[in-house]
Image 1 (cartoon, one colour):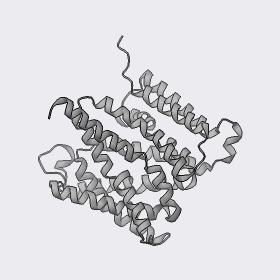
Image 2 (tube, rainbow, N blue to C red):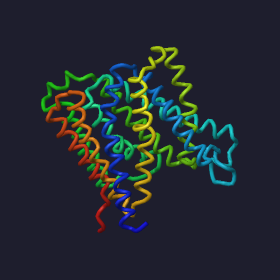
Image 3 (tube, rainbow, N blue to C red):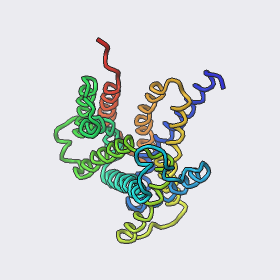
Image 4 (spheres, helix red, strand yellow):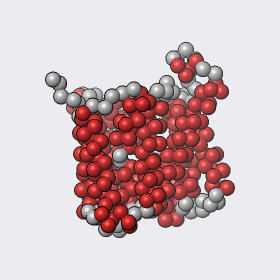
Length: 305
């Protein structure tokens, strides 16, 4: 494949991933109209578990991981099972339960931009967890992004604070801590990604089933609920990540491809307005734009002096 063909293919995969991710906020809200958060998560987890099981079986990625590799690979099997179980408890169980509860309480146009600040949260957590230092660009990006959060939440007026479900806001921001923590822990793990995902979802699904049984009960099984489960499991949790990874691996300009992800939340607002019927407030667009600007600034390479 020629370089030009590879870049075109990478762009196609990336745009497909962006388009798919743009639908998830709408999918969450539609699914939560007929299902409780834990019920929607159980259906999505079952679909993802099946997807990753098929991929892991086809590629021979079930082994945890073979001996002779560094770090966790030389530890006992029981330790490695505990490790993947801990990852599964974090993602999908805790992260998505918190996120879905936030979406259940907040308008999608607020929940989705708040969740997008996870990259800023990760930059903050990387200081104590990985010993990284905050650059001037990162500090500026953090300040800009959280200014965008203030704009988003106030809706242009200090009186806007009183209309919010503050537990929903706390949950949405809390989900960013869980997601950032998951990726930081992932960065320190020697576990192959597909192996980790297959085992995590396999072990997480019974936990979610128990939570449904002890809580709201089993989800009703209809074409509608199964559709929402497939939407969450394939697009949010599964297949789209594979498209994105493929795009980054094919392209010689991964950073440039990575910038396309910033299109997703704006496309999502269009769907939120047209499909969900939410009246998009001007401050939702402005706040999201400021958050994205902060993320862009934080990702810029520091100037060479």
